[in-house]
Length: 67
Image (cartoon, rainbow, N blue to C red; front, side):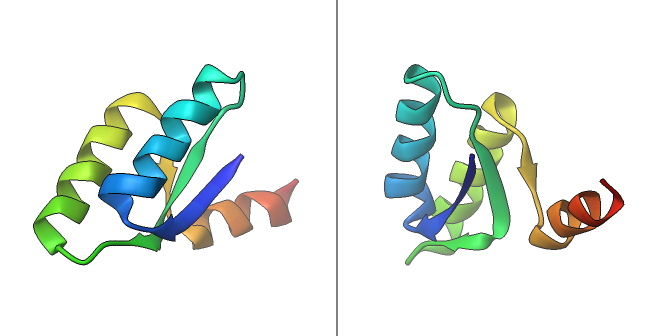
């Protein structure tokens, strides 16, 4: 499950946690999420990197092209 969206420190974080609880494997797209506050955005990404894979969109697209 690829995640993108607004409010890295809110909606994206909670969606990833809920998805995992429901049996999904969330993957966060680093350059496809945003927040109103840069510090909170970076903190949320750093936290999510400890729980789930976080990749750039180009990395995911390259892996798909190789497959």
